[in-house]
Amino acid sequence: MPDPTISDRRKDEASAWFVALQEKIIAAFELLEEEAEGPFAKPDMAAGRFSTKLWRRTNETGGDGGGGRMALLAGRVFEKMAVHTSTVFGAFPPEFAKQIPGAEEDPRFWASGVSLIAHPWNPNVPVVHMNTRYVETSRAWFGGGADLTPVLDSRRAQSDPDAQDFHAAMKRACNDAQNPAADYEKYKQWCDEYFYLKHRSEPRGIGGIFYDYLDCPAGDDPVFAKNFAFTRAVGMGFLSIYPELVRRNMALVWTSADREEQLVRRGRYVEFNLLYDRGTIFGLKTGGNVEAILSSLPPLVMWP
Image (tube, rainbow, N blue to C red; front, side, top):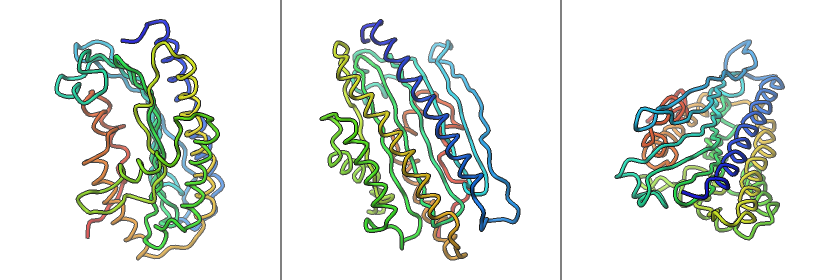
């Protein structure tokens, strides 16, 4: 494992940021709920508030394996939204350790992060996903990203203003980090390739950025600082753009046909998360909180 003194400081800084970002997101999304004036899916819907719950896990020996904080919202703008933080540690099962950098020779790990998924009521408002994380095995790295999924075919175009503004925000996050490793074009392409439903030969959404294994060598604090700054910029870049996309769309009228199209598109979302999503696989393989891991799934879905 990395040097304990350096490692402990980095872990404290990273986990504290993820908790702080969760609080910022909770405040921003509760404000969206309060601002909404309709039309709503049901009459007299009240503004949603997050319910939070702490959870703990046991590790492979029955000891303390860390835990996290779930935050769930169901309201008049968001049919379901989840933003969770976790800090977990232990040892990977042998068959899974082979898939994780630095874990094959030493299966011990530590991982902390924040993950968000939002499923709005209004089909004009795109679904969004964001997560960032810091992981230590015998190596250490940051990973994460954010991507946008419009659910109406008429809005699933790179020329749509929502898509253009979301991509611009992610590009700014890369540029603002002033980090040569924050390569927007590389991470944009990685996102397009990662969030792709191979069995349907179609993208999940309009993309964003995705990055992983952004290495943080134990003896190189400047590299850690730059990569950490970039990871913070991704979180704040998301927070700067998505609430604006919600505000511009949440009062638009939608039809029953739009709702059906939304539910079918949500089915594609389920397929991706259960078949391909790394975070889902990581959480389930490391004994994470199943309720939190699967909270990314939408509350109502349709397969034609």
